[in-house]
Image (cartoon, rainbow, N blue to C red; front, side, top):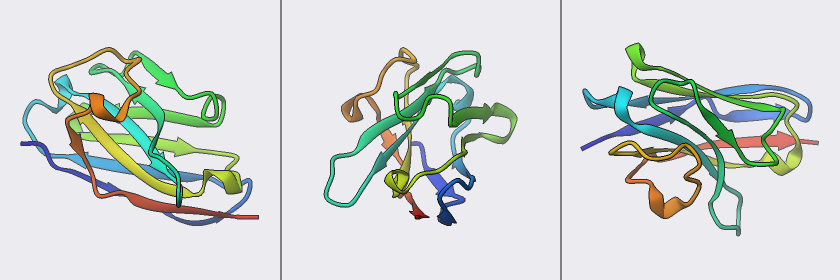
Length: 126
């Protein structure tokens, strides 16, 4: 069983930055494919970014490229999402997800992930 706990969300002005964290339980964290998704009010959950087990390979949605960076620290069982130049359309609940066993870094569908956190709200004001 894997438990994921997100933190770091909040209210920020457009153009600002936030760093989300996702703390994972489980001794095999370093083998998990980790992803970040988001869900705006009234919309479907959508892919943001993924990172492979070593952190060497990452994959981003078109809207995330150039502004958002995913990283991980396997020693701390934590994955991060650094978000810069935030826009009002980035407002959503952000979810951390894990896939066990390891999958391809290009996996971007909700159904491809086995475990989910409870989400953290990010609100970007204009």
